[in-house]
Image (cartoon, rainbow, N blue to C red):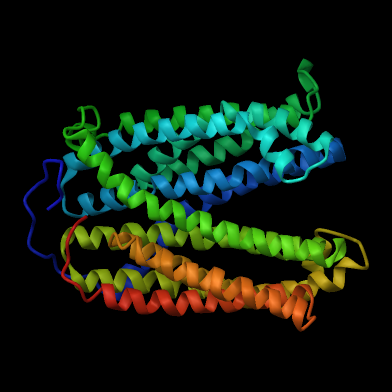
Length: 460
């Protein structure tokens, strides 16, 4: 039984579902989550494409600003991910009133975190200057971050609402809101970047203003959805949360390791980007193409991991050990199949995929080679991501980040460096390093899930 909030009496363990049923339910849940997560990348891609047509300088300003804020966003999402865990477990246990209490407390966390992120964005010029950017990029990127700053609070509160609805197994509203947001973002970009329909021509700053406006709309729309849930009264959405500080402490204890895990993983991949830069501009360009393709397809893994986290959390709430195991492995099997489907084109169509990004004859062969390696990486990277989601579903949040630390910082980064520079394999060596880390993470997390699944069941 949870502490710090009134909960319903624990129910006897429910009858286990078949593995096939778990697989079907995970697939149905993952679809909308994948599309919602992909929407965030699609908006960045649209911003970049439209700014690229507007001017190279504006694209550089936006890219610098986006690099500065993306780490904060990923860490912020991790810090707030405890909401999904506690809500899914409470929902599986039919402890509906606790779900609303968790949402209200997490909502406050999201608002505070968003304000802090906004203030950091306002100091973005100092960050860009400290990384050795040119005075022009520092000035232009700083102006973009100023515009991004006031869109940070709604983004984090939107994340909380999304996590809450996903914890209730209701991902469709988040997907629909994201669809609308992508279209609105493109329209506002057209107006504010290029000065169409009588709007001001603002370039990169216009794209940043559009992004912040869209974030407020996304948040407002999803907040209305939450408040107007048909079972809002039963969920305790409109009631003040009792024992606010006790719930807050529990959510923070979940959020700290989840946020740290996001930061460690992001920092490791940033280190590899820096290594690629030391190899030269052509290897860096080729590496960015491969890395970008992995990032796009990885949204499938993120969505499936979210679905697995909720499905496992529901099983914990039902106190059904068999369902915990089946829900976890159903997610792993699903992502292995999906990533294998993507791996085929990566392995066989490296050159055509590379040509989507560049016509440079020096970059194309390097990029095509890297894309082939990326196809192998996808399978294991997807598996480790879903295993992390399954472990989060049982609120195992401290050991898995440690295992990822080993995989990314003690395996990926050193092996990538040795292969690229000591053995002089070049940029391919960096990708082989990622493969070694992804394979290691999948193996370590598989062992951890097998161990945790044997433990007595307890809600966090």
